[in-house]
Length: 158
Image (tube, rainbow, N blue to C red; front, side, top):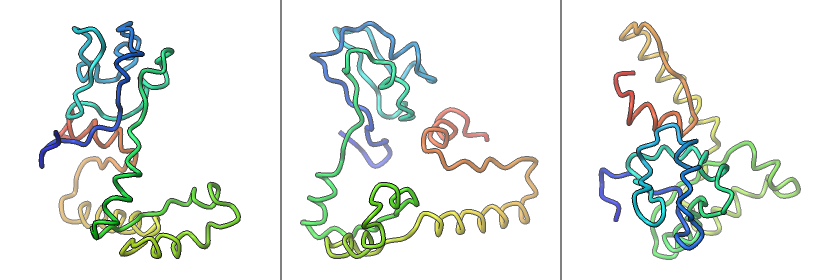
């Protein structure tokens, strides 16, 4: 169960396919988000950074990313206000229809659609303000969710 302060799980384990070989643990950059003490390895989502190294390493196909598309659809149907952020890669994913993506999402009920580059512009503005106001020795500018989660959980002093 997810609480207000917990992270949503991003990796799931198929208990029937996990043979508890611990390869997933050996490749994990934070190791102790995994627990191999039972019949299969479990993951603590509050300490997992969601990098996917374990999925790549699992030769038993016991680990997969959690697909939350159905929750997205259910939330739209329930009238939840959802804002979508579209990556530039959508042009590669939908080569003949990428210009219609925003319209499609709006027709589904998405309240607003923004391009990732808009968020990047806001982020740069925030970095500049932070540098001007605080004169930090260094600034880490990294959009990778696994790296951001790692820093937030394990290196908050950064």
